[in-house]
Length: 508
Image 1 (cartoon, rainbow, N blue to C red):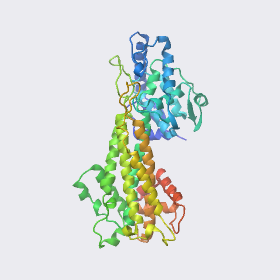
Image 2 (tube, rainbow, N blue to C red; image 1 turned 180 degrees about the vertical axis):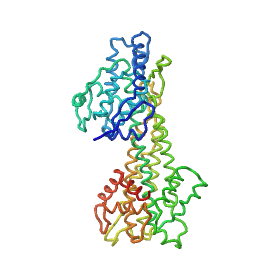
Image 3 (cartoon, helix red, strand yellow; image 1 turned 120 degrees about the vertical axis):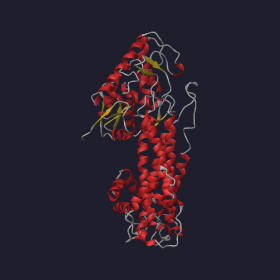
Image 4 (spheres, rainbow, N blue to C red; image 1 turned 90 degrees about the horizontal axis):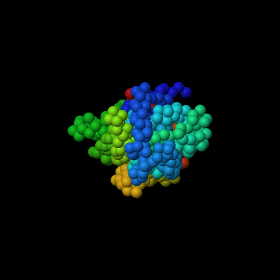
């Protein structure tokens, strides 16, 4: 399989680039300018290590042990011990795409030339990415204090031939994975261990893939809502530009414009021009306001991530121009923690309003359609419990929206007395994204049944294309069957991107 080459320099990595590498669809290489910066940074570290002046992380202990001086003969052992002692992660390994993203992000921050790592150590990381050697990194164990210490330590274990790794998808001891890929572990020199474990790359790896998924789900939410609107014979008027222009939030304007584009070409809207209904429920009428607010939240999170993935988050930082090595706090994950909390809340708003639209569809008092959209209702229960499932997922998502970014448990004997819980926020957000996807799949499934009842009159181009795609995989429910299979089929249409491709093509 051909894979294009992605040049990294620590400054220009895009979120979409990260996704490409996470999917193992690109090779990664340093720019010549970055190679020069890395060498210069390493030269300064080696000069300091050769001297007698204490410098944190180079010839001292770590954290609360920063005042403990380490003899020159023990500097290699110091770095190795750091990796071994900090590899205290637990739980399920990060999925392969997230682990690849983690390795790429660590390479990118090292490429900036502020970490003091040797070029050969960084090159090993790049070779691992390109040859599909992916460290096994447990998900749990980071409080986002000095960054993601435990996850990054598990990443670094593979560099020294310890721990475990996946090679071409197969899990095995790290040394064996390196050998199969034709690679050799390194012996870490002064500061290199610290350069590998300080930073926010684990929360950013999970967060970046979550962010891109959230942005996609915002579009799916518009599609689902447009299908429900048409199935319920709702009005298109709340989406006209004049309404949005007098409250000009960018997310609201973008959502309303998208809805009008999806609904264009509708024959259904013409069937109820003179109906007695004055207003639609908020879950239909206020889609631009609610979906738009979620888009604003995602825009905030994207802005934070775009800065963070190209930031120097090591400690201490090596400033070649000033001939200084300085301790600071760029490893603190608070910006990411807050952004991921916002993403989880925005996603939950999308699932919450979606569940209310499902209720509008299945409740005959609200829809003027058969109860629970069942044919021969009573004998058949139709989509009664599909709405219950959606409600359960929304309820759990609301629990997961308790903000991690306001929690803090001091660690390292009080030296790390305020922590970010950034990885916690990212992992919660990932779970909420799963639930939101499923809620939207349920709405699309139920709305498709409502549109069946409206045939042969056709919906707008967007909901019509989505309806036809669903029906190519899931038949109309004529009598009760296992609904979970239908939900899974629509989830696959969302996850694969096929739903978005088909609808975009129909509305282009």
